[in-house]
Length: 204
Image (cartoon, rainbow, N blue to C red; front, side, top):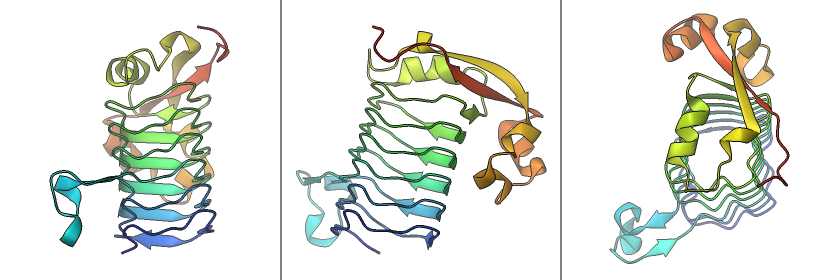
């Protein structure tokens, strides 16, 4: 447990992390590249999630994750609720059962990432880049437009097309951790979808 710690610029590259609580921590520009992180919390600490003396109805200790990097990492069962993660990088990472509820993700990148059962309800997605990301739902972009903070996600910047599970498994972080049969079970079939960015972020 690493609850409410200051680890800005820390290097967790290739670490194996399970069942850890980084809630309310300072992790700006920390690196979790190529790490495997499971059943862990990066969420902000609020009254109902606080522990011990922090268990009140008014405490609000945001998890400060600006510039954090999870490039080529594998994340499963992770909660980023209300974290401040502007400019975070999830490029080429695989995310399964990950929650970004009410998370600030302005300028974050998910380029070439695999997103399976990832929620963005109430997230701020200003200029977030999903180019080449592979997702488990054909309506992923439409759902993002509905779930994100109004006006922060521009659906017209992206298109989506069907691809095979084999293409998903060409992503190193997915190939190292998932079998084709497991992916098929997660997505409910043999088809996944790949996103392409077609618009510039400067466009309104």
